[in-house]
Length: 311
Image 1 (cartoon, one colour):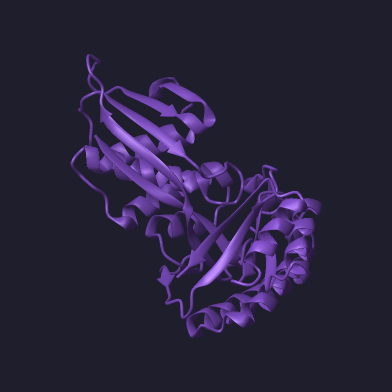
Image 2: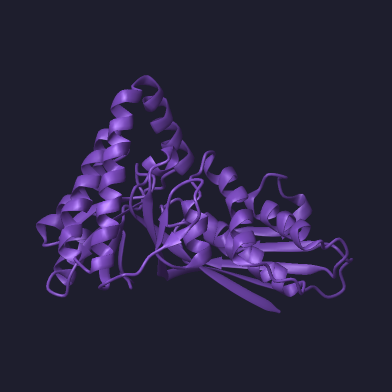
């Protein structure tokens, strides 16, 4: 039996603009994880695979799944990558504590965990760059036109400065950051949100390119502040990024309510994280504000609130 896991992720700065070539910063969320367990199946024909995914109530033989089902595809791509054409029957058991369609990288984490566990079980463990490439192919099924940031930060499990088409760049964290993640409880389709931005960009490219440029500047200032440990600079930058996302049309009343509740309770800054339209927001807090902000988020309608530390 082989087990592998992968963390969730949050985007600190730069969502949506990253699809258009601007930088973004994302960090792993280790409080939630996806885990894949692969083991032989007794008394079954060679080459068959049974899939169990408890979070989405999936149980059955892989060949019965739609050819474009994300789990089937990551299994098939992994088998192709390692050159496995004849192998004992296997079961792939997937468990995840990452909310689906919440902007926390659930799909990417499942893909990474499955690719790692399956390749290790077959005796040909894949390096991170190949796991990342396979997971990116599955992100295309989930999100249509993904930036690649989700699979990258989940694969490498470290803070990432990401620009589409350029090498992955991590960076040091000068001083730990404490964030509270608040879940609206609303599912949010990244593919739908990304397509909505594309349509609005096509209608008014000048305005949207200016928004994307402003977000890019904000991302670079945020990275500089994080590296220097100047965390007090990050709150206003988060608030500004939220204003730009609002102008882009990707927020929602539920997200705005949580963002304002966090700020009123003492958060240094707050913004949505991910596609918008639902999903999660995050607030930058310190020791004196963390409890009050958590209480305020729950009172404002968050269905769950949990901390994560970036270090």
